[in-house]
Amino acid sequence: MTAAPLGYPLVRGMLRIGAVLLGDLNDRLPQMVPACDAPTRAASPPHLVRSGPEAASSIETMSASSAVVPAGDSTDTGYQLTVLLYSDDIATRDAVRLGVGRRPAKDVEIVSWRECATPAAVVDAVDNEKYDLLVLDGEAGKLGGLGLSKQLKNEIFDCPPILVLTGRPADGWLAAWSQCDAAVPHPIDPLTIGAAIADLARRGPVA
Image (tube, rainbow, N blue to C red; front, side, top):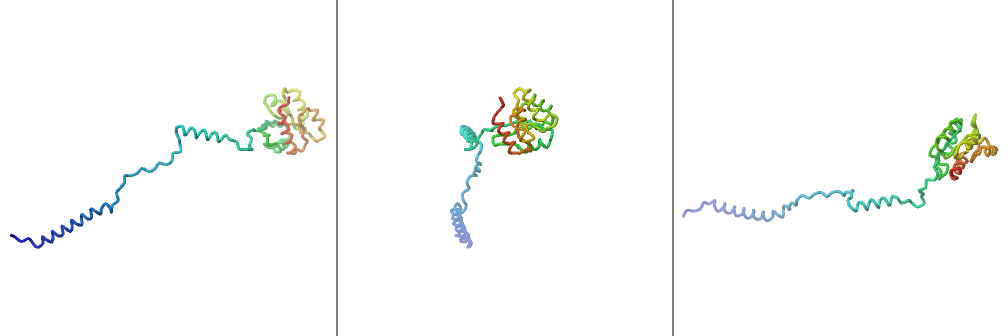
């Protein structure tokens, strides 16, 4: 019987050792490398648009809540006036507009002004357009606001209320003759003319 080479037992031993080490490595590998999960889809952001009955109920709720008026507020717009202003003096017209402003009172708003510098322009405007109030300068040249007021009251059917700017407080009798609805003396006082316009607005159209 032929003797085995000297190196054979050494090689066989090394193979056994390698097999042992490899088996141990296989046992440890699952613990060393974690299992890979399947890729997950990123969560969608919240969708702001709703559909179905839920959307309808939310729209109805929002509409109902937006219609609620806070306590103490009023939905009434008050009195809105279109005003014709007559004077041949632009400084007087400016003083009236600036003194009255957009709101002579909390419940009274001037929505538009129409300025006229001649009596003919006033008559034409009142004949063809609708105004809530006429403000006539009694100190205007040619035909003053007092005479123009009397003419309009006698010639215009359903003439709007008229406020005349008189030369002085003592001209009250002239204001009565002119058939105007109110009179305010020069110089223009913002509080006085604002109060007069607000009072005429609250009275309503002249019967």
